[in-house]
Length: 235
Length: 88
Image 1: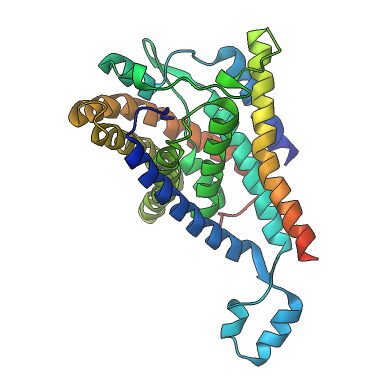
Image 2: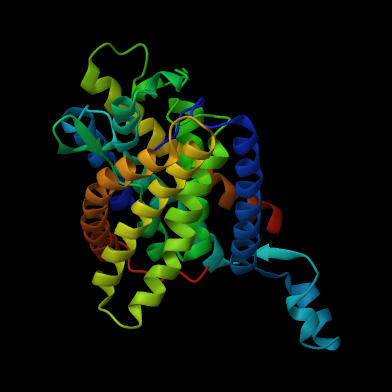
């Protein structure tokens, strides 16, 4: 669902670029807090000033666990990149491929997972000309913000009532459909084509692609957890 | 760790030989509705997941896939190494 340059009005593209920067900035802030701790010397000094300063300013350094987390993010990025290459036929003349948003956030947590999807989108646009440059913000909003970050909360909400694999599957389906609707909205509002028609057509195709996303996501998470014994991501 | 990287490479190589070459959902909608021509064709170092100097299509896409995996992985691993270095 990588939008090429030209489908979206430049003004909307720049707005979405700003939104993408804000989302990623927030995610980076959250991940940084999770993978670092106050440097020992500062921590000792902070004890004297009370607990509040322990979590406040001071030089933060990467923790051992934090380092493992970043390596893990790299592995998930590699897996998502590879899986996105695998286009499967869904109909005569149409294909789909994994987005991997829910895959990433279930394995890594909402913020680290969102960064991973955005990083893969950037690699694809810069090195493979897959997805536009001016519209990179739009693609990040669609697939990383809606497809990963927002979808994490769908998954987390469902998990309170349903089995985990079912929550993953439903969230994965929703992630594709919501990303498709967001893309349609951007294309429609840009005046590229009538909004209602684009939305209807996109919904029809991606409701089917979403089923594959759900299946692949559930299977890949099972495999990943077998190979790499990790708990649910916290960052 | 190594296993996930090998799995990713396996998926990329399988994709290079067996993935569908049909347009994806968005491209198909744009084709059907007739606005596909508004999309700008761009090129980059590995346009369309092919390494330019390898003529065999499957091998070229496999190589592009492996490079993409290494770039994605490297981005994060380089960050971790950098942060570890400045932590000292």
